[in-house]
Image (tube, rainbow, N blue to C red; front, side, top):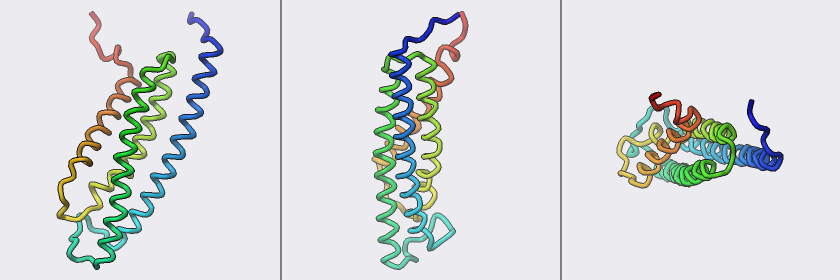
Length: 161
C-alpha cells in the first residue's frame, strides 16, 4: 500500500507536466517549420549526398542558409534538452512522475531526431568538418540515452545481490 501523494506535490507535478507538454508542442512546431524549409531548399535533387558544384549559386546559397538554420536549431535544442533533463532529475517529484516527464521528453527527442538526421543525409558530398555539430550530436545521444535509462529505472539494470 503506497502513501497518498500530497495535494501540493501533485498540483506542482500536474503544472509541470502541462507546461512541458505545451512547450514540447511549441518546439515541435518550430522544428517542423525548419524541416519544411530545409526540404524545400533540397528539392533540387532526390539523390544524396549531392554535388554542390552541380547547383546554381542561388540554389547553393538557399541550401546553405536553411542548413544553417536547422543546424543552429539542433544545437540550441540539444542544449535546452540537456538542461531540461537535468532539471527533471533534480526536481522533488516522485520517481514515477519523473519517468512520465522523461518519457515525454524522450518522445519529443525521438521525433526531433528524425528531422535533425536530415543534416547527415541531405548534404553535399563534400562538407567541411563541423566540430560544434559533432559535439551537439554526441550530446543529443547522451541525453537521449540518459532519459531512456531513467525511464527504465537504473535500479532495474543493476544485478541483484
